[in-house]
Amino acid sequence: MSDSLHAVKTALLLCAVDPMLGGVLIRGDKGTAKSTAARALTDVLPQIKRVAGCAFNCAPGAACGHCDICSDAGATAQASSVPFVTLPLGATEDRVLGTLDLEQALKGAKRAFQPGLLAAAHRGILYIDEVNLLPDHLVDVLLDAAAMGVNAVQREGLSLTHPARFTLIGTMNLEEGDLRPQLLDRFGLMVEVTAPREKTLRAEVVRRRIAFEADPAAYAALWAREQDALRHRLATAQRLLPEVVLEDALLDLISHLCCEFDVASLRADIVMHKAARALAALEGRSRVTADDVRSAAELALPHRRRRKPFEQPGLERERLDELMQQADQAPGAGESEAAPEQEGAQGDAEDRQQVFAAASGASVPRIAVDTHAKRHATGRRSTAAEAQRGRVVRAVPDPNPSSLAVGATLRSAALRDPREFQVRKSDLHQQVRMSKSANLILFVVDASGSMAAQRRMEAVKGAVLALLTDAYQQRDEVAVIAFRGTSATLLLPPTRSVDLAEQGLRELPTGGRTPLPHALQLVLETLEKTEKPPLLVLLSDGKANVALSDGGDPWQEALMRAELLAGCGVPALVLDTESGYLRLGRARQLAQALGAECLSLEELSAENLALTIRGCMYPI
Image 1 (cartoon, helix red, strand yellow):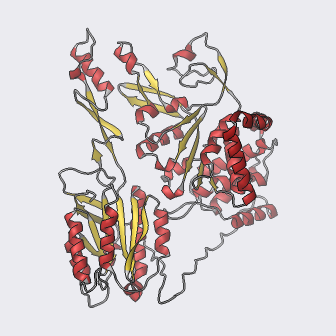
Image 2 (cartoon, rainbow, N blue to C red):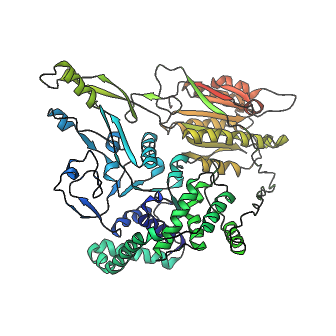
Image 3 (cartoon, helix red, strand yellow):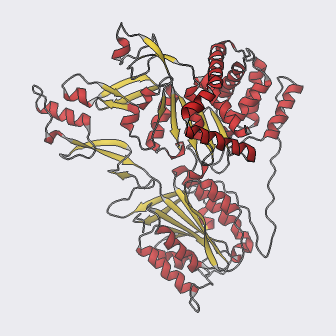
């Protein structure tokens, strides 16, 4: 088994031993069995006691106050498999939280609650595939439940709470974008999984997969003994866990490691403590060792070390080894100084090309959109009402609702005739939702030779990275077009992973001529393929000198395509990279043709600057 697959297995087993760990996030490439591993966990978990038909998965002797089944004196708990509930990305809040039982309400009975997915996942596993694509309104719901261990429902005239303690397991592919920091920190453990590189191991994986597809029952029988042994091992570890002791010196070591790795969240210390004890219990030991602490650090710290949007989660193994060796030599000590960070060497000049580092900036500009259209397209920077998904903000009368507002409809019928309850068409109400979805910010970066003068490319890269930080915080999609030499290149197609954009910009070489018309033509072609509201950010001095057509005028071609973009209503911002005493002002002329704001890089670096982009916010 490869190291990454072993780490996935270990993390899942630890969550089985101690469900209070907070779950595990599994990140990796496509086709690396992330979902398969997560779904397989329930097959080895020891069974739990529950009453048949209970929608809240109440623990024996701790019935939920809203559960009529478990409140029955004759209810008998039976052994049952651990719940495994999948949270679909397209689920509604009603389906997740629970809602008014429409059937009971229409029968004139008392207001009854219909439990949702959080109730079904209580004492079990809540699984989210592609968790990084989970809509924000569901992330907010999940954060509340994960933090409190209860689900509070305040909707449709209902006001109740019920237990919702579950093990959260999420899988994701980093190419689709990262998680919100708040949700990332909620995962107790995180592992990176990669496909094995050894051909013998890959071949064995294929053999087992083919054997399973040919005869699933026979394959399961072949591994039944190992499954039973693992199930017994987990049950033993669960019983042993309360007796496992973690000495105070090792707790000091845990806090020391968190400080040395610059981890802000105190949740890291707590999770490491729990994970180290679970590791010891899994090995059948009643005392935690330093090796347990080290293994816990590898699972609990990588995703909590992230300090900036473009810093990838990770843990330096060499640094961890060094700290552990210091702890062995001086138990309880923790006064070593952090090793100084080594700055990566920049690329050498080659064929008159230079790779400039990004200039550091103290502030992060905020992009504010000022739209003047009659109606707004859906966008995070222009909140959209009447959306198909999102939070319900109000209910309005509608005889033909596409999304029935149950509470408002029933209240209307009750107020109309309290003595004879009957719902009529005139009582029907429509739910009005409000949501936010990503914009596409298209960065068009001039990488021609003029950007090397006075090291302007450093400032350009620094400006783009600052704007990317804002895009990350707003969860926008980004795309990057670079132009230099004789053509423009789509350096990064539209993606939610701003980390990929940052990586491409850092490695972008500078040199050659300025094919500005090519870049604007590529902008038109790129925006034709997207349905998201675009924001165009162009960084250039405007000194076009490469034409699209033979004998053409590069500058006039650039102006013509800028006017086409303006005619399509694409909001734009031009950042003038020209510097020096004598300036041609081409960037400002280009901004006028685009109908866009024009700022210098000096203005961009001003503290607390909000960039105002005006336009109609429609994709072309």
